[in-house]
Length: 220
Image 1 (cartoon, rainbow, N blue to C red):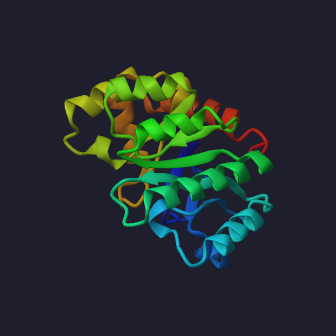
Image 2: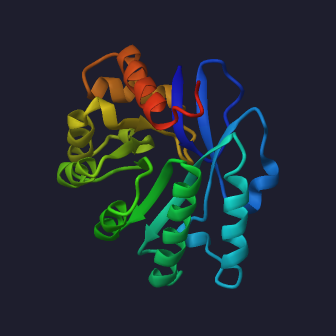
């Protein structure tokens, strides 16, 4: 079974693929009861005039069984939204994740020191989505028990840095995703297997274990 940890576009129904579809709260009317979702306020989608209502909607949606993660949420120094407001909204969504015992899909741009600080205050599973960082950064995140999810970037002529990071990743902290790309999750698995000098079957086996660890209360 291929597991797509983070996608913004649902793929055609396939018995071979399980995916988590990311929706922003305002798109929650699009939920299909037969699919799995992550829902959260992306740092660039914070509405300064409507933060309270946005947060209330996120919490309401966490009560649904098929909303299995809070995300993507986090901090982004490239966003036009005030960084202090981003931190406030991130903190409150982490509290929602704790309350409903849901994993967190984390978005981070140029704010890893702050992300690592907030990790100290959270007991939920965290998955850093779309990771493209160096080995040294990966080690810091892994020491904080954060899972790393790799996406389409590994299928480009990827940088030596990214290849090295993925190659050295411990299998028990690995996820793969498509995010907004048109590259199939199967192709990403195939590329990951090649980089890690293993087989797609072993990648599937390793990630399936991680799915059970992170989403054990959902995938029974």
